Length: 363
Image (cartoon, rainbow, N blue to C red; front, side, top):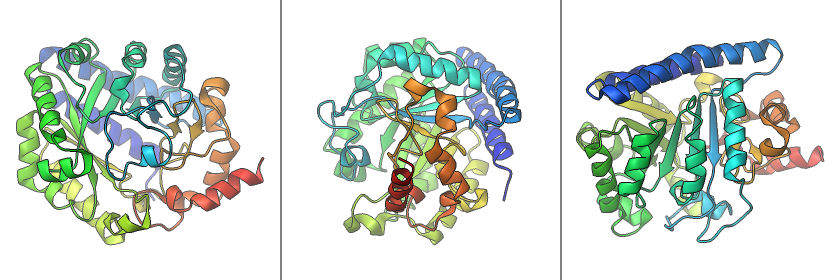
């Protein structure tokens, strides 16, 4: 097994260096990327090392669901299926001030990146305005792209540490089939506005057995490059019912995807490629529950990952240190649960009955 801390730090350094190279023609963004490289690969790593000597291992990443509403009804949406998001607010959410306090604490602990999800996070401009002021962190915000207009372009121009990541499923047909008619065209319009403003942005693609070849093909990557896309997140599909299980990756697809992404990284050095969860076997299991990241729900609940919404600690109430020391996280790591056999993109989702039993046994 590779050393996890070294693996994560090396990949983080590589990511920021690639970002720097990709914006060399934009002096303002190049200065920002260089500043973030210094912070994330030096200062943040030192903070994590200090806490590690105190017995607390701090991962570099957080995933945070900041919104409980969405303006689309995508097929197979886990957030809707799990009650995280809906047409109207589904559960209490933290205030902008509470999120700001969480991320301020995160900086002090050495967290470098918080991936913002929902729901549709752009429905919460009030939260984003507060979060963006935490300049020592990067905030990739995963959005369907339909709400981006001149005001949001100006917001992203002002806050370069908030990076829009627009979701696609591939071409117009596959994207509109899952997300709704006209969504692909609207997403591309948003990309054009961001590119015209000289902004750093990316795309997120849910990969399945049906689209994996199409969305990694050289001609598709060239299309993304032409649109101005600088980072591509490949997220393995997690089936929410048995009828779509055939779309989830097995071992062969996971291995193929890892090799393909490695090839893309060598052939396209001006684009960042991130594969989630990536090759878990290389790291002796998934990176949830604080090994590489953990998830904070809209109400502050500290959860192993977005696909495992179980919690015994509230990060807003108890703090991030308590969250990392939570009995559930500790039990998952100590029981080697993160290396359970599974099919598809999430170990803990497939073994959710065992996770629930583990949580109940400690209550």
